[in-house]
Length: 144
Ligand code: HEM
Image (cartoon, rainbow, N blue to C red; front, top):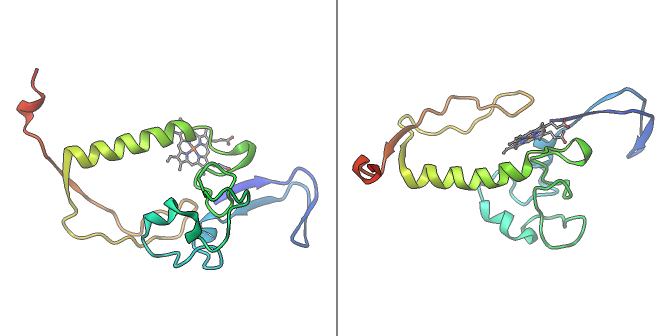
């Protein structure tokens, strides 16, 4: 959920929003809306490589739906003046960190993986995900 406070009254989609109202934008719901996304619950990372897979087109018709806050169907970092200021750092760190975790370790999820969620403002996991890392390289490789 993203939260905002209305500083003055405004109309959105025919609804009058009084000043000082606290508003929550349900980005969890938007990302699961079948009117916007084809088969939204399917794990299909390649959908982000080709925006034609989204039912809706992006607002600029640039052909690319990205995460920077211009395409309202995908807002992991929020949008506007209060959007996440750490986006550039996060986008660089994410790829490097994920690559290092996959390159350096085999991961054993032992009891299996259950991706169910429980209610909350940040879509928390329903069940803990305990993974055991097993180093893929022998320590001597890193000895100086
Ligand atoms: C994958 C990593 C990250 C995600 C998904 C994420 C997501 C978000 C989201 C959704 C918001 C709310 C934006 C809005 O209300 O429109 C936010 C705010 C914020 N994020 Fe991040 N963030 C990430 C990493 C970071 C990093 C690395 C930093 C700092 C180094 C950071 C600093 C902040 C700060 C300071 C705010 C509050 C901005 C404000 O209220 O004006 N975030 N982030």
